[in-house]
Length: 168
Image 1 (cartoon, one colour):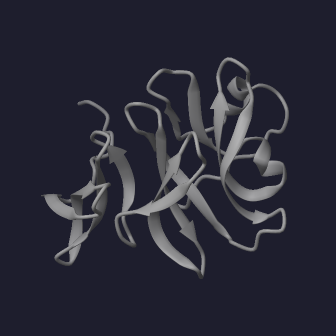
Image 2 (cartoon, helix red, strand yellow; image 1 turned 135 degrees about the vertical axis):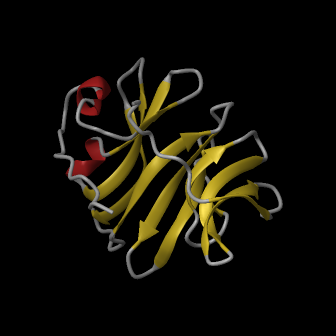
């Protein structure tokens, strides 16, 4: 895989201006918020994930790695909103401490929890109690259905979540 693209930090300006350089965003279901890598937090941390409020232009850092007194080198990518906007999930990694995994964040309380198992990635919500991830099963990559309440996982389809391909 190619390395993660380097996005130059752009401090100041509106959320709209900063999003012009981001290549991976997730809009909240009601369109009022957007989750994206970087933001104002990049002036403090080496890597971060923010939630921007479209109306006010304000931001909130939801994940931060390195810098600012943190020694946890890593990243947070591929954000995904639950249908009611009450939760946000992303793929996270902390070098030397935690394997690739999925984190779920309660947008009201700020409480976080891990979802699925180590090496799960690319989470997308199905509904309030289930989601799909790309994970390992039987020695290969599978799309797995994850029960968010009980933590169970069921293999759904061999392979990874499909990537967008140009039409022919």
